[in-house]
Amino acid sequence: MTDLKIVDSHHHLWDLGANYYPWLSDRPEPHFFLGDYSALKRNYLPEDYKRDAVGFDIVKTVHCEAEWDRDNQVAETEWLTALFERAGMPNAIVGHVWLEDPEVEAKLEGHCRSPLMRGIRSKPVTSATIDAPRPDGPRSLADPAWRRGYAALGRFGLSYDLRVPFWHLGEAAELIEQHPEIPVVVNHTGFPWDRSPEGLAAWRAEMKRIAKIPWVHLKLSELGLKQAPWSVESNRGVVLEALEIFGPERCMWASNFPPASLRIGFRDQLEGFLDILSGLTRPDLEAVFHDTATRFYRL
Image 1 (cartoon, rainbow, N blue to C red):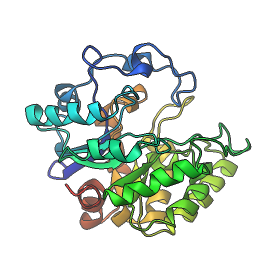
Image 2 (image 1 turned 45 degrees about the vertical axis):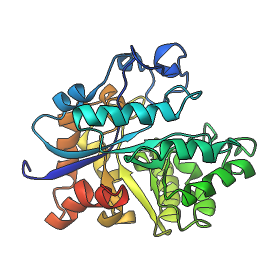
Image 3 (image 1 turned 90 degrees about the horizontal axis):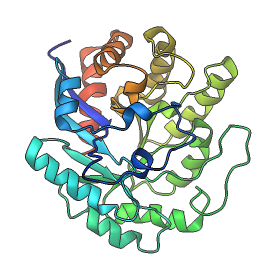
């Protein structure tokens, strides 16, 4: 499929020598979903991405916030904008603000000075397992201050990248339904971490719940598991079911590089997705790999 034009709707870049990312520099993340991530503690810049993606026609990319220093969040957008001017990528930016921050609107204004700014990803506090009590304090989905910050996204014409374990999708849907002016995209296939029949049934139910909202989209991305290798056969069913739930017109492919490199190379991952989706019509393939992301992120 060498003639397929591809938009990568979610990747990361970082320069550890020039910028500060606490999780990569000096504060280990003990609960990282792929386990040991020490291999990520190296620069990953446009030339590294382009080397990984060689052989594919990646026409545009979307950068998703990479947990830059939270004391200076707008600076990541400024750095990425300058990077685009030098290297031609990324072509759109999903930045970060703490949504419960009393100064959230001033920080959104700072982000929106960049012509590449499209949306926000701000991870709410979540429960560690499906059976654990749901958080209801500061920075949770139930936090009134967090909800006020979420509402502010609509006033700035910004979308929201939702990154939560699948067992929070229904809870998130209750808030999302109140704000049809804010386009939403679920990150990483809803994180189907539990591949047991019971786990997949729970994931399926939550995905169907949030997919009922017509302005919610899905990133077919990051199928890596902490204790298992990435393989076409282990991921085929999940990808095809997610596609059936949302439809090609609301699904977009994303590499999640470099984090996904902990489990699989760029070429093997993308070829794996192309294998899994080989039964789609050409228009549906173009939707998943190009058109949905182009429309959602206004590329």
